[in-house]
Length: 53
Image 1 (cartoon, rainbow, N blue to C red):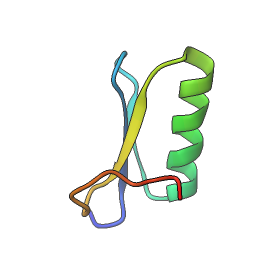
Image 2: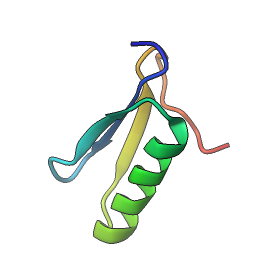
Image 3: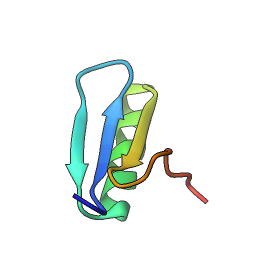
Image 4: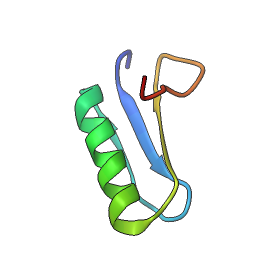
């Protein structure tokens, strides 16, 4: 599953797997904005969270 991004909300059941980093970031940012929740994303093959940089 290399290159798959897991997006997960820390405050509700929202989560998803995305093949595109752009799609994952868009879903994360949209959920944060619409619900004011904390959401993180992690590339499955990476040991630490991705940054927006």
